[in-house]
Image (tube, rainbow, N blue to C red; front, side, top):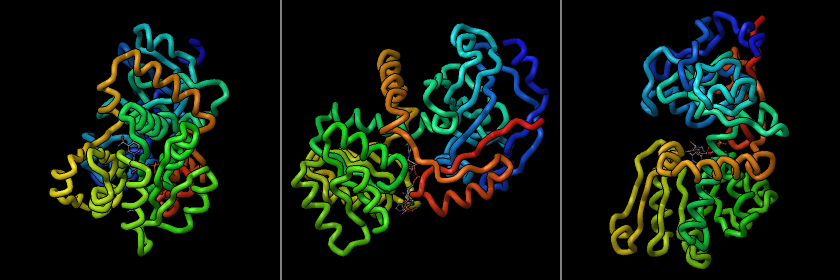
Length: 339
Ligand SMILES: NC(=O)c1ccc[n+]([C@@H]2O[C@H](COP(=O)([O-])OP(=O)(O)OC[C@H]3O[C@@H](n4cnc5c(N)ncnc54)[C@H](OP(=O)(O)O)[C@@H]3O)[C@@H](O)[C@H]2O)c1
């Protein structure tokens, strides 16, 4: 193990951003030293997620500049700063997320709390393992909400996303009717192939009426909203009494539109969801069982299709490719250590 530690260089390559919406530059910076309870992860892979794009624009999460982006990834723990969990992680292949306000995964090494690492099952590749946290845990959180809230059916929009596809597989498995909303007819066939029974296109003329009648017929009372903006109004209009609308992203980039009359008369709740906040409301035993459940399904229902891989240096090209092909699968940065 010490041979691994001795092989850690003094400096590393990292992607850095100097201001909100600023250019991404590849820089050589010192490899950080883990403190107590922390580990140093030699990074292998990291996806580009919508949350990364929001972080790069600024204002999504607090960061002091310059900083290294990247909100999840995978690698091998090569050093620990001491403490039981950090020591136990040494030498393990892990999925990892950065410390709050800390530097991220788009670098050769990342320092993080041992609590923010999850050992990967042997059958899971570093590439797939890099996408363990953000979408799989959110999909499982939504399934948990559907089951504990005794919702007879669920509605999800931006449904051709990686997360949307995970939700389709989970709902098929659990026999929970799921109404999927996409904005592009070309996605319908693919989602049906995954097992989706109901796929509506928000661009179709009869969309609003169809959503209202399907939601009513199936008793859908959990509405998952990744778009916000004008579509929230349409969800609210279709939501039966005592429904919950869970707003988990703002892909539409516009302010949410709501009819307060619908909210009041039908006793509807609109709540925000952020995975980290949601997990914080849960106790340690729930979290351990939850992570175990996620790991069990990583290779199947919670797997992400990888559309294309890029090297760390090509991060700008990777972002362009990703933003132009979001529904085609994840774009992954593969992080090879420099000689
Ligand atoms: N709150 C949380 O804790 C949390 C956790 C995980 C994920 N999320 C959110 O969940 C969403 C899905 O994540 P992902 O990684 O699975 O995404 P992804 O695979 O990158 O796919 C994004 C999807 O959004 C669609 N889309 C983008 N802009 C749109 C718009 N203006 N109107 C309609 N559809 C639009 C795209 O469809 P087209 O092909 O039509 O462009 C694509 O299917 C993201 O918004 C992400 O931020 C939130």
